[in-house]
Length: 181
Image (cartoon, rainbow, N blue to C red; front, side, top):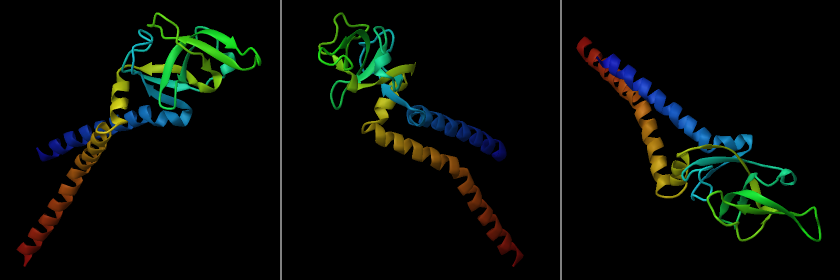
């Protein structure tokens, strides 16, 4: 009975660790291959990108962008947006400087200002629905603290059987030693 419980415990803890590793790769590890994960927080790009999705943005050569392409760009220091290009606007004085007129798929009107090529972060290459909610939650307190606590508790539960087994072995050795005296 005890061995079967331990076996089930080991299987569940292995599954849990695998899930945590996959989640870590999806949220942070993809940066190693040049992708930036971003949460979709508004419905301006529905139905292309749903609220709560996690989009993966890759660097893009701004000179190759054309109307119809989707770009992620900086609005200000703290805010990014992902919208579709509706027009490429070369600068009047220097045609090598490009600006882009954008519009969210779900928006009726084009965005108020042009996006300067230096503000482009990249272009989305794929998305995972609903994962953005989790990513956004664990990036800010109290979600960050909860995530750290969950990972710590998971590791405690994973190593708990080994710790308890060592204690039982020591208790058996002491009991055996007492009987031989």
